Image (cartoon, rainbow, N blue to C red):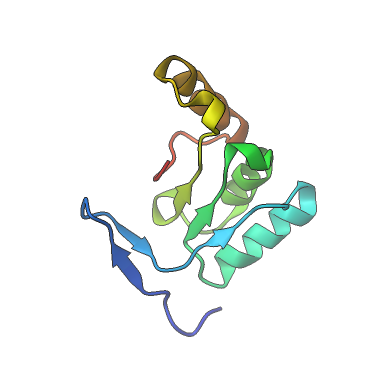
Length: 108
C-alpha cells in the first residue's frame, strides 16, 4: 500500500483528478488484470485507457475485481480520430463501455 496519497489537481471545470494515473497500454488478459489490480491496491485511483488500446475488457475486469468501489476510481478513455463525428462517436463510446462492462467513463 502506498504510504502517501497521490495529490490531486483541479481541472478548469472544477473536476479534481489525481496528479498521476496508471496507464494501461499494452496490458491484456489475466496478466493485465493483475497489473491493474495491483496498481489499484497500491493507491492508484486514475486508470487511463483508450479505445485504440483494445484492452477495455481487461480494464473493466480489473475494476470489477477490485476491492475499491467504482465511484472512488477515475476511469479515462480516448476516442480515435476516425470516430470524431457525433454520429460515429456515440456508438463507438457505447461499444467501448460495453466491452469494459462499465456504466460510464469519468473523463473521455
